Length: 637
Picture (tube, rainbow, N blue to C red):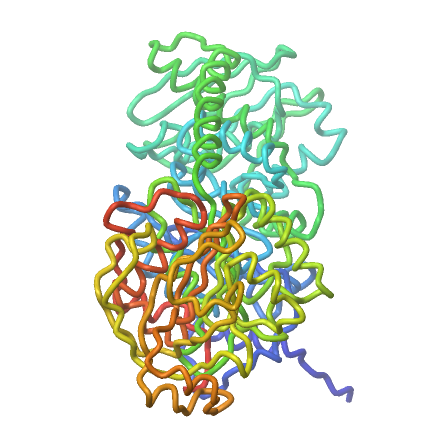
């Protein structure tokens, strides 16, 4: 008898799958080493049964072929408050995906940063445009569930944004890929013989969407799969229980969609051919669609051209317009021209807003230190959340170190490093290549910020650069790193201090930085055209100077000899070319982000170095206890 073994991935998938389908007892906890490298999929919108259905196919421990090499790993629940069938389903489907081992996140940006490909399963087509743009901008392949959009304008805008960012995407329901329907697309002989078709499907209505978009889209996809592109006009007859939309194709062929609301409702298709008339169109489940998505994510061409998808939505829009006109024929070209003009304005306005908004990129380092310390990943996500509604600002973040895809830095107005430093600092890796890249950003006017351990580098590696970029840096055995609780009671007149009230916080506040021109850094100064301003200044007690420090323990004689001297724990610099930088030595303890003034002074600094206008009262934000618990790295306590 041959002994068979299960791969670590199969074992992991079995555990998640069993948790999803029924009670599971035991204490098996898979380790990170048990997971093989897979294509990571993120799912946006858990308000439809499609979400758990798709995830169970990908995350099934017995998945074969491409599905065995891909996995849904993270999801953003979403939901629409004005659609009952959306918001009431989110809790149930969220639980089902969590049972499959899928991690929930609080934002689409967070999801995008953790995956290789994206699926939008949001029930509400009106949400799809805003949900698709971040995926296009990040260069992630994308599948959008039906309906593509909540209007023809939005559908065309999605296509235009994809073109702008060279995005790979397609949209379809699962019905189209049922073998009995899809054969008319992939078999050249069958395709050539088609003379016309009638497709039908359920056609329930939803007040927030055009009539056929919500559910009639299924039958329209069957019709277009058989007929292809080329419809020129549509005429619609509509009653309470039935819709009939008849299209004339440029070849003289006629195709009809029949939407059913009264009596028996089902999916079906009649194809009028050269020598036969076939009846079929049976729905055959989600698997054929998921296979097509997996192929697209793996590198195959998308199965449906976007032009065909857009024409199909124009067909449905023309049907609506025909209904409004009492059943008159409506030309596809007319509705396309009107919608395209509106879509172009929408896209232009969005791109203009993005071009004028200041882009801040927050780069988090890899996990280190015990729980609730050096929570870089959670910290940048919290700061980005606080900036989400600030006008004229767009914050993006990178998790776990330098990004594999450096396009996130394109068009950045400011880049902030919150990470471990020293010889392992992310900025000094690749034999100085990254230093050269950052230096070029600085020459182009990009603001640079460094927080906590991120202010420390080895002087011979990057000392000159850090002094130029942010005005100074931590130097081992020269600077020190005690844990203490300074009282910040006086602030300079500077945009970074707007709205900041006196506060104190226990933290690993570094001091005695190696500032430019060997300045003590505790008073404003001009150095070779750079304007240096200390932001957070306090005087360490004698006990603090006498140590111990965190590492090395100290004490250092040169630190003790300066008893009574004020020290800067945060500072800013404005370079001769107008570029800006700041250093912030706090950020060791994650819970300090719950301190409103501690958080505000950093948020203000993020805006200032990006050249965004800091509000008169500073950046107002609220952070709940629950939000402080979000996105913490798994660490030993």
